[in-house]
Image 1 (tube, rainbow, N blue to C red):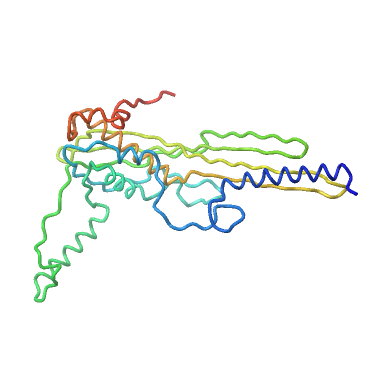
Image 2 (image 1 turned 180 degrees about the vertical axis):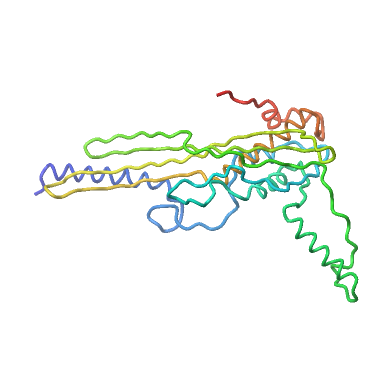
Length: 291
């Protein structure tokens, strides 16, 4: 016959097991794995609310022919040890992110400049083929001149600060406890619009996005009998993908740049009535916070 103490411990184990399953169910998405998200198929990259704002912008009077040569990481920041001493803290693909955001906004006609040498090489191959007999069908048409840009977008990722905020909360009672810890990093992006004809900087914007990391854990630590220890642990960790935070900061910078241009009449809307667009008003009226 079980003693009252053993029965009490049994109840605690049952309660704790329920807590552990509840904590882990938040990360169980699909697949046959007991814990964790399981196997997932490739899908389109998730996007932040700034992407929806880009898609909701009112139409321009005319699309801006623009180019980006290099929108690079200017932080010189590496991942914190012991993760890696040589891997960079932020993505090196910011140029591709900016060009994608320009396409999504519907305000720009982006021109390829990062791979310009590859384009020039292909054009040389076509011209060489046109001078010979039996020219392939796709090379018979005379090459037009390359399109020139009116506006050049410059800038880059100019800051990445780690551990700007850290904290946690926890409690234990009778060997049963739970805790939560968090850490906040911050990424900063600069974006400038330059008039190609004069070299004048039309507009310059800096945006900041936080990168949140959170860990939740729960567990039991009890001696059931002499030299018999019960220990149960479970937890989850969630980290915002840094590249998606960089992408969101770039999208936000582009939105602010477009809004500034409309406000200062550097470019216009398809209809003057579109100035009342909620998305456009939000970014036109945005103010810097003072710290």
